[in-house]
Image (cartoon, rainbow, N blue to C red; front, side, top):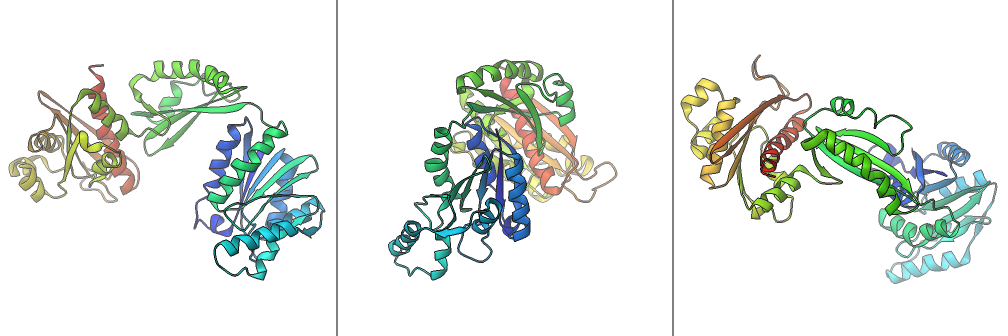
Length: 414
């Protein structure tokens, strides 16, 4: 069985709001072994809704609808369902009573307009909504199953969990589980990573291995189906093993692991500390680290030395070095890393410089050219890379580049 998720609302198609409901619903369906084949987002337009609903019911065995169940004129889901099913709307007294009770509990008068929420296509089953006024709708249309839920995420999630999920299990529509294992890498581009894994990423292969890129992080998603979680994991394990063997230290984490979490964990294991001096990243490096709970145990602080004056006054960088080599150079970046380590008495010092853009600094320093340096008691290392992207992308990628340098250094003793 393939599922389709319909998300309804002009606020979604206009880009004003982000559709997070579809993502969550796909994850829930995967836990039942039901793959989602389509995500469709529709504006509050009757003809568009009729077309989208008809198309979904023509190709998917299960359709989950999010939105369009409110009391206003632009809420069209009830009307659309009546039309595509050929079943007229009928008033459901019990649902109207529950809507009135919801308003009474809030000490608010119940508008007559909310009465529209108590109408359902003939033969449909109301789905209770314990935290809102809009009941959901369950229907069986021409051999297809459909669940319409409110667009409010809190209400939608509760109704799916307490009613729709048990219903799918009761009907025997669950087909085991579909599990995903996500491996995050840093250090090579998407095409270079795929070249190392071509035999694993071929279409139609089981388990499926997909590649996604986001802000210089390349993620590999291994997806496998099994009758149980254990069975699915057993199919994922050998593929993950091969990927890790081929990519080695390029793999820095799994799931939602951020580079900052991994680095702080390694610092904790070794009982070591970090200090940072930032120029091009403008505080991004510190921001990444401090979003992790307990960061202060190992991250001592950051000096954002965005100008030469601050580099001299706060870090003690030589004016002569700045004049001879320039603020964006390997030499100055290394000096900043050493100074940050000494000023804050840390085990490691990290520093960043470069050209965030959008304009070039000079022919030899184009937008996106950055430097990252790592210093420790008896050593140092510096890297340079030329990013192609927006100003914000250059800053966030450089912050990760610096963290990755420290990660690899911390792994050397392992």
